[in-house]
Image 1 (cartoon, helix red, strand yellow):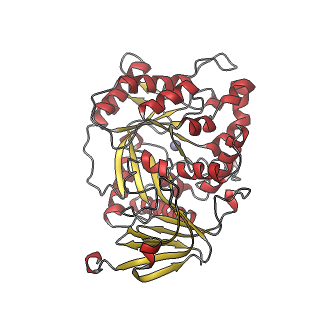
Image 2 (cartoon, helix red, strand yellow):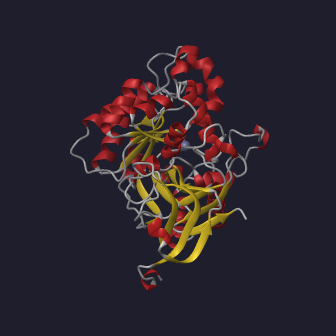
Image 3 (cartoon, rainbow, N blue to C red):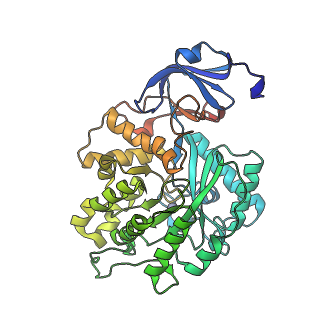
Length: 447
Ligand SMILES: [Zn+2]
């Protein structure tokens, strides 16, 4: 269809309000034109095109579509509306097998995609699907789910773009070097990387601080230090190193669940000495990073590596963690402000269905975290937070050249909000998501 459209035409023009492009100079424009899913004009250049359809913003604000760089969509869709941190009492939480059949897997993914479209989320990372979970409790993370993803992808059914990491152990649990070595060599399906990019692997290094299972240098209140979840090799540490080295040598992106300073340190050390490997599709990163030290943040920045963090989970677990960490260490935990100030690649993510996939609540928790470190509630702070869920998330995906900002040549993925999210003093959670556009196509409209 696109070849029939001459250079003076556009499929869609969006105009009549503020459009934050989040380009390098944070330009705001008043009009944006789309052709064949791509942005082809801004401001006057957009206005001079003849459009087949027009969306009038009527004073509303458009921003790049939200990219939740750590969200378990299959699990979210299967559990919805139940989240781990929510009003659902423990005895009413879904448990056991959640999906068993192809029909159930498809409906879980479709439910998640509908929900994400309603929230203005246009991209996400599905962090950990693979054979390690083939006998898993929920059915949400096994090879069958990967096959369902690939099938729906082939049918053009997606309304969000997906980056996927493979998993060769259990979710939030142990993995063996043997399974990892076998799994990592299995072939990958061919997909269009703009819709389903299988970029690398997820490795669980440790647990979480409130359970005293994060691997830490300084002992917890009970005298323990946590430890690694990797098995095989000579010991857990050699297994962890070998997994990282193997994935790096194959040119895969590596995301490590690491909350303790000790496990983050081991990841940093291996990355610092892995050179000469093929470039991964996107930068390596730590998921969570609760107890990352300033030195580790700086070393990660120098490596071009990143952190995918969850300020809303921090808010939910803060007092729970106090018993294990003590007040002093708790005060330096979840160093979001320090990460943003350092310039290290940082993405703010939900980890849904652990916390809500509603990014507006995640950003309110983020505002609280950085306010506690002295950052004012102003347009600059708000822009920095929003950039972690758009521009920086696209960097984490290895996709900064084609998504994450509203610039000519990039994909037309947008969220239209009732109010300007950069205006200080307004809770992000009070913003109305009016419309979500993916690839130039409306996938959700409020009215
Ligand atoms: Zn997760």
